[in-house]
Image (cartoon, rainbow, N blue to C red; front, side):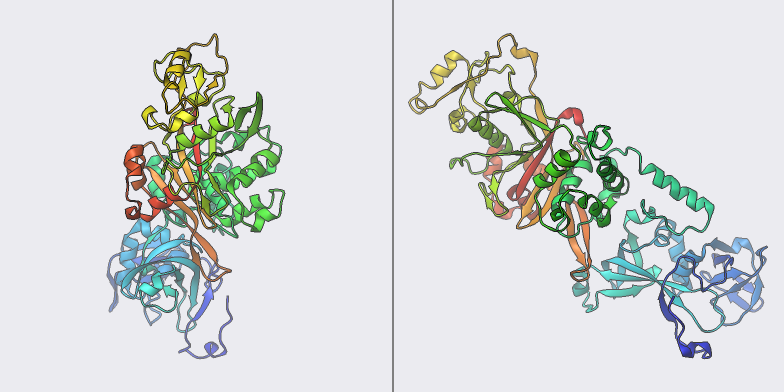
Length: 585
């Protein structure tokens, strides 16, 4: 608490002193019970207005004093005329000068409860200079009144308007002080206790409730469901807060764990090498993300400091570097991919698509890119991967082989599995040969794997345009029947994108065609270089429209007319994430 000014001690006209709030409000007498008047009444000749603030003078709550009155009038009060409230609640209301406005705020019970739970970094919509703006709470201020007989301090909110908001309001100063009556809405994460710091609690019941929250966070919390996404995940200060070049890590973790359980096994496995890292990942990042929709930057920093290399703390990295360090070097879990090459199985956690550019293909699908890459490199999956993370054909952060890529909603990997019976493209009989050069033939359904039985292979390659093709014999699958396995398909659940040096992600949060969100861990910024980032999640339903198009329809689009987020999705794709349906959202 700031000290009183020298004049305040003896001058009844001294101005209030601004100070940072302490939850216990030491400047007030302890034990007073405060209230707001909800029904007008008369005390002697004095009319007590609706919305007036007061406190009881005795333990039996029979006599009271109204702090809005200049006189120290003691009066009897009927409980039917008032509503009892905590000191903090009364402080927020007393900060509103108009008794009528106080009553209107109390009448909106849900909003008022959220206001009384406000803390630094919470996002609010507010009235400012006659307009509506969005800002971040910097602190709660206590106005310590030093004159008269006031027994209660006023609580005001110090707010920093988001970048662009102050300009729109012609307000040169981005920081404003408002009372509780100026708040219109508050981020939903405000009403929950921070899961890693005990708030200062006034009674045992509050402590018990908070402890229950802390215990819950250690349990297995499922991914966010589609029905709760709007309330829990959308808006500012949602997702994972970025800090010091952490976007590569924020976007990867958000994509893998917010709405999918495909990698939940690593959160609870008893066979991981570093259990401390596993605990931080589960308790400090994944669980609060799923339970509260928000993870503070300091929680992520705990993980970054344990990634075996100091460069993960401050420098720019790529998602595959982070995944390799986390899954392979630190947790030492079984690699996600087993890929056969030259009769040997190689294990890895992501796959970089490598191929020569086909000038005839302007907008490839991920299905085409994967098949082309596997065929040209003579690769096969040893087994169906539960999670397949594919790096798009681009080099560095700037060069892209294709200006646009169409992520396939379903990725058919049946023909890319080792020793799996396959069908001839022409007659549906058992296939014996496959040809990568036929993939780009417009007469043979371009983009899909081309495999033939012995007779059809001879007929297809007898064509004058295909006589120089070199078909490869398929590994023997004798004894396996083509009907023994259905088509094996993976589902797209996230796309990581990068433009210049900043990673963002688009994540599917439900089975609906339009169930897509866009996440940016550094969407906005508070303050100068030493300030903090504001993460944001916003719906992106328009992606469903484009992703449902055929390859021909999509390639014929005028991309200059595409909205900014959609263009970012199709133009800046860096890594596409797929999961096997058994690991459904």
